[in-house]
Length: 133
Image 1 (cartoon, helix red, strand yellow):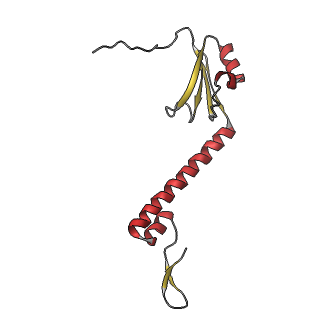
Image 2 (cartoon, rainbow, N blue to C red; image 1 turned 180 degrees about the vertical axis):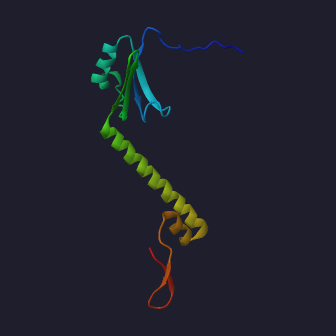
């Protein structure tokens, strides 16, 4: 087996990095992108002007400055709240899709169960049974 890798393993002279994360750094492996720097001063200058170093407008909630003697996580609350709203919306859409599929297979009671609706039957004026919402 050829163990030679065609890519660069990294520059050992650039000890500091600024990385952008979708989730808390270290808890998951969701680093979106990053850049390496030779000095801490260069890395801090990057933090001060992210748009110049990351022109594609990465709007991520966590920024990590890492290197010898420094490990700082910056939390951007507006991006964090936006990410949470997007996750909540995705969860609602997934729940609705699951409920629709359950309804197609098992009818309105299955749909209501999947949506968490009250399925207690009651009688109306004609003594016919309906399902409460």
